[in-house]
Amino acid sequence: MTKQDEQWTSRFGFILAAAGSAIGLGAIWKFPYMVGTSGGGAFFLLFIAFTILIGLPLLLAEFVIGRSTGKEAVSAYQEIAPKTRWYWLGYVGILTAGILLSFYAVVGGWILIYLFKSMTGQLLHPAEGYSELFNKIISNPYEAVGAQLVFIILTIVVVARGVKDGIEKSSKYMMPALFILFIALIVRSLTLDGSMAGVTFFLWPDFSKLDAHAILFALGQSFFSLSVGVSVMATYSSYLSKEESLTNSAFSIVGLNLMISLFAGLAIFPAIFSLGMKPEAGPGLLFIVLPSVFEHIPMGRLFLMMFLALFLFATLTSAFSMLEIIVASLTKGATEKRVKWAWIVGIIIFIIGIPSALSFGIAGDIKIFGQTFFDAADYLVSNILLPLGALLISIFVPLRMKREVLMHELHVATSIGKKMFVVWLMLLRYLVPLVIVLVFLNVIGII
Image 1: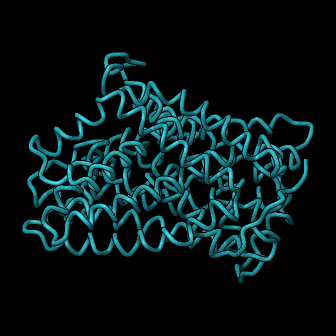
Image 2: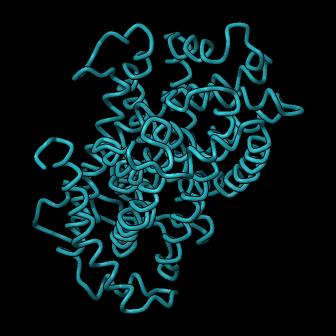
């Protein structure tokens, strides 16, 4: 099991790539509709708390696993805990990433369809209305599966090029552009009549709207939006130089993630309330509201095309990380095998995701525990596999990693004190597993 042949060329490139993995659909697509269906401001406040107290310690835990060994997830667990079965934690991450990418690519396909329609002038002012247009697009089996395939191919092509020339290079250009356009969208959304009602819904907490499932969703969203619990960040950090600060990188990634989540809420909810729509629209929220917002902006078609292109990129950066953890585990640092395995794994994931792509059309009546393939895959990943992976990682690091290794990794190129180290280790050892277990027990009715 050799160390990785490749490395990020800079800490900035690593942060943008890791933030791209974390941001993607988690913050821009899923976060707004989770807030809309789970109580607004109370959910957002809970999400912030979970992200800082649970997500950040886990992110650092995955960082030290990958950087200390310089190996992809499965090999890293094997090196740290030889002659044990902890390496299965790497395979749990691979399984989670595969299922996640299978339905994630479906949403990526929707973005591709919207981008094409915006470029050809078919998206703004549709005769049937935006909600009807969205339902028409996702229920068309040929469009849904075809676009899903194109999205997977784009993901394969970049991952096949490697970390430095593929993932990092693309992240450096497109992530800053996404921030700029997001700000432009927020400014316009906040100047719409009646927009303050949306701001109040998003930022003013009403805890009476929270239940056990909403708490679990907030916890799952904090994992989903930071890409923790999958060992993706363990794989990404294995490409990081030994001289870079893990602590500073983690704070930067969490800060960017929370900022984009805030941006997403300020861009979407003021527009929803201004246009008389309901925040409980679910997964189609962004696809229905965004075109309506751009209708009210001068040169709206151009702005919509640009935003959809950047939204596509943010989605792809998350997809890169999901495919990367699987490919890295199969190639184990052998770059000459990367192209072959990227294509093999990508096509398998595409096939697995076809039922999810058809869940809003011809396969809509097929249910798994009362849910469509798409919803079942989403629930399995966000509310079972991600928290399970996070729970196991929170147990693994304090139990199996030497304290001096942890201290060394977190003290590189930073002034973090011993007290901060102890706080991090205490959160990871006690609070993280306790919160995950309590939320699960509450949801299944035991407490």
